[in-house]
Image (tube, rainbow, N blue to C red; front, side, top):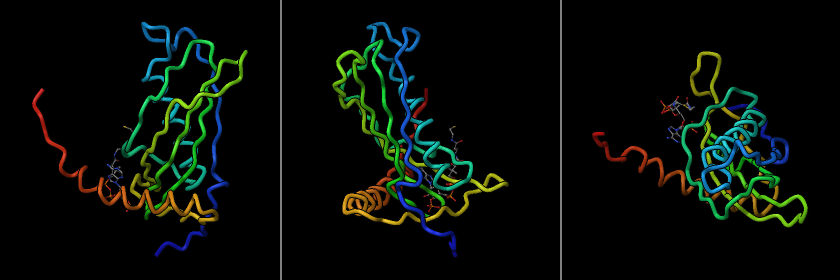
Length: 164
Ligand SMILES: CC(C)(COP(=O)(O)OP(=O)(O)OC[C@H]1O[C@@H](n2cnc3c(N)ncnc32)[C@H](O)[C@@H]1OP(=O)(O)O)[C@@H](O)C(=O)NCCC(=O)NCCS
């Protein structure tokens, strides 16, 4: 049985900032999606490891939509928090905003949900602390993630194979 003390969402929240450099851009001069996905994965991993105090790996990315372009020179802010915990798994929500540093009007660019699994020393899934749900929003997100996870676990098993 999991006897780890529960932890609040606040304890593992992560906020990181980056400047978009020309080397991060695609052919249109906007931020390349793969670079942003890497920043999202890193931010979420820091959050998962801060919550579990275990090495935690990305098991899957639930959803990740690019809502608005991000331009070279923009400041990008990534905010990650744990919204659900299972036995060894954690769902991490990442919100990304971008702003022109001269104007300072943040634009919402991405909302993503990533699934992480905590490992023990033998690289096997291990228990994580449950989250203390302290606000109505935290409770709503937890219930949403629990429902979604049930539906997705089934889908993950049924993904069609294909020949390349
Ligand atoms: C993720 C991984 C550990 C799952 O292995 P598994 O044999 O299915 O493990 P288990 O059946 O014991 O499941 C462990 C947990 O992972 C969850 N899980 C398994 N597959 C998952 C998926 N695709 N997405 C989200 N969670 C998943 C299970 O629901 C379970 O959660 P719970 O403990 O909270 O109930 C394994 O597939 C793995 O190591 N993948 C590589 C991860 C990695 O290296 N990521 C970095 C990028 S390459």
